[in-house]
Image: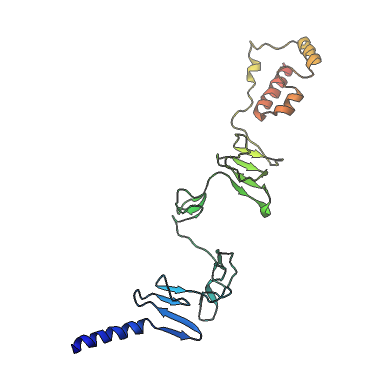
Length: 254
């Protein structure tokens, strides 16, 4: 009987001791006797360690180095700063210094699954990749006219307005579309090059000059050459235009 009484007394004292709270400089520390979870500023910790600020302006968690410099801080707005006491966006992250990721790891925007991210950055030790869905706009100073757009169909656009609409491609089916002028030192065409050598074949039928004269009087342009109005309306391909001009020069020479 005495042994049973001693055992019950010991259990009671233990429960009381572990359910106590301690106050240090006005802050309260709680220990859950069932789970041994520790709460600072809260009596109902939901994890092994839970820290709760007492006011909306107080940071619940700060880590400093031996010189008193803040290296990790959870801010009242829900943001986290690393490396310094930076001011992060609401529920965001601010990093003072370099940010390093290992090879074959990725950083994504959108769903947490690697295959469904809308934008993803990663490197495999040899090549770097930027994987995106629909359009990727590069905007100078957040201007709504994109300096460079990578379209979802694998083409490139320069100088087009940005859009939130999926599948809105401004390249009209071409690999490169530029909304403005182009200046460069050289353009080399390796496909669709002008080929009018057939003009020198013996059986090539040169149009008589009198027929050309009558055609020009009636149509105001050379035969087999579109009119100025048609050029303005439809534009032209450089390779086709060069072929037409070369053919007319060769016909004129003959």
